[in-house]
Image (cartoon, rainbow, N blue to C red; front, side, top):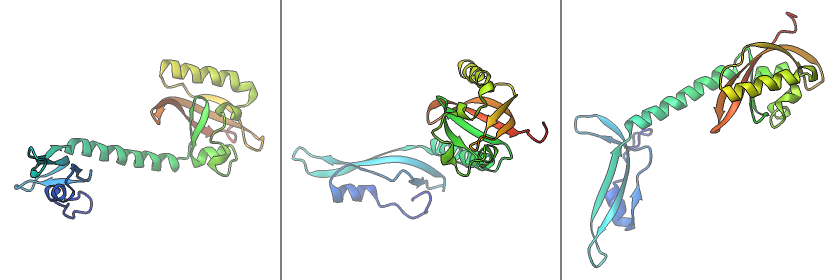
Length: 194
């Protein structure tokens, strides 16, 4: 059956006989054993040909990928949970790779006075740090990437898209984004407190 729709999947042996070629089942296929146990499977079917090239049978090859499928679902669920948490966070969150901003949550946009992510993404993260604080910010980011450890919370000044100076507390952590090393920074506007 198809794991999501629960509809029967076309018999792969019949498909091979019709097409006369190797076929692969949909990646969402489940096999139900006689005892009712369900297995997520990856499989294929191929024609068996005699010396004259006529199809005389079909071979089915499949493997139990239930654990990989379960782990994939866990990863997707965690991704959705993480995204919901970050998107609704009262703390600004940005991610930069090689110093270039690749992500900014709604609170990060608000902190620097941006209306949409396009105003930040693709720009250098350091452009939003006050010129007097840039050396320290760069030193911290480089140390974080070199050592792979969480950078302690620090106070900095950011410069908003409108030039307004914002006092913030920021903390960076090393992360992986799209298979590459990156830095995720959590930012809190402390202007009122200051």
